[in-house]
Length: 111
Length: 114
Image 1 (tube, each protein chain N blue to C red):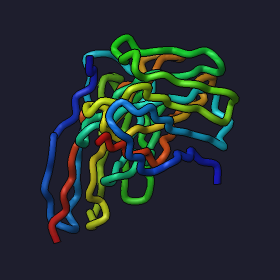
Image 2: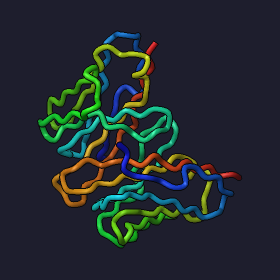
Image 3: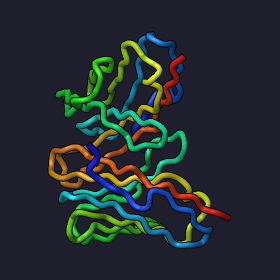
Image 4: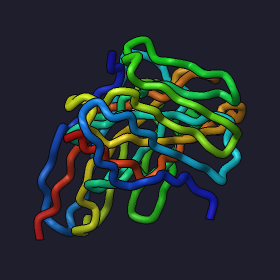
């Protein structure tokens, strides 16, 4: 069954606002990935995290690997209309295992 | 650019008529995955190949099969598609032997079953 939770499930924000979302688990993970998926397309990798406490940026996006290794956070600064989509987190517990996915956070940006 | 390619992007088949979806990669990754995704839900793993080793998920129906003839290509065969098999099918790759394992997805194939 699904092992990752994402919060919020959906969010509506005004263009220009900052966005925060998170991904949590009851288990420890050693890798976190964040994806964005547009309608009718495959998920696109945004940020990959491999160490507890790691903070990585990709343009206006910043993601952090939680220090407990049970969570990860994604922030988007100064949102724009093209940020609209579904953001999935994925985590892997151990070397050699498959990634598991969260249910996604649906982001809507109002002009 | 190195990438994951899926063909076709859209596939229409009839109920019960076998269909094959294809995936190729230029990343030279050792693992190739097939996922099923419905209605903006999280992708659901069907199976994966680690090199030539096939690994089926316990709840994947027998109706779904896969072939990986070489490192670059992987196929998803649906032997007798039902209406419930209409979905987006996503191929992904990763290089599991690396500490920095990262998974990359193709653009997906949208399957319609009439």
